[in-house]
Image (cartoon, rainbow, N blue to C red; front, top):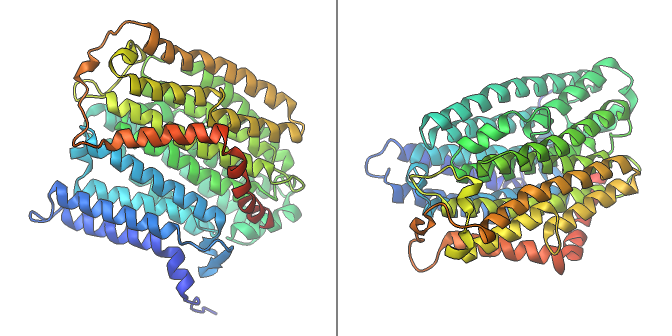
Length: 495
């Protein structure tokens, strides 16, 4: 018999970020068809008010693990961690887009409406225990990304990348949905927590095994793990750089949050299915991602293959999850995710600062001699490249240390060895950029880089903050950061 869910103030507080984004999206959509209210200034004001209000609301999400609407909405430290990070990235991307030459095409009513709506989809997916709600959030975010990639800058390159992403993403969504349907048929529940509890008793069933494998394939596609990575280089290269930065960071936050909820506590029961599959995905991603990055000349395409390799490192920590494991793998993944998001946002901010309307597809050679003309940009990029490669004293070094430590604790010596080899390969293409900036003569007229409007540059603020966090997480704050993640790891372990 149907019963209305209990409505409480805590429910509205938890759902406030999503509600704010949906309302803001509807307002922006109405502005797109209004002559008097559809100016860039008006639309941009709507975007800023909505995003900042939603970000403020995420900080008020209760940390006590609670579920609402029969599992359709969750509160807790993991939900708040993911939502705060996604909203922080959204604020950073909007700050960079405001000063970028593509800002005029971004701050339009229809684009802002899509952007706010896909943000709401991401938050729904992060804070859901119900498979139907989770899938709706995923598709809301994915469809929004497809359109924003191809429609913000309506050139042939962007449209081609968006169509490729859309076609492959649709296939992956179908695979994921079929996997979820088989898990539901095997476990008798649409709740992820219920599936986690029921999987040990049905692990030997054929449908459960196939469903688990198909679900993993769908998540691997969104995380751009090899061999499900083909969409990433084209999408990263063709999208406006601000959207590329957003996609490279928020999608990983969204998918890893779901993966942690699903795999923690069920890994050993489906060990024969998930364990070898994730090992293969991790190994291929670390090796193929780093090797393919070696031969790239386009800067964003190189960062795309670098992102694939970093997904492989995170998959190593996922392999370390089991019912008897401590919270170290979970904390390692979350710390690595935090450091990766900060560094990626900073690296793409440098790319955006150097792009012009005549040259929005930078090559690695274009960075030659950058230190002579723009020493601050070169210095920031050097910090980010050191962190990506895992060199001290940066957050990337500490993140890889935690990842490999979690793997060694669970006796995954082979994966650690391959991870070290992959990191060694990455040194070449990361340090090649540093060599170009400091030891080569300029081959591109970067004196034409546009100065930030006004006395205070928003992009410079993003760069300064990213550099500071990268260094602090690699020197004096890693212990405190890991301590703050203890509660999140404990919350996941209880599910």
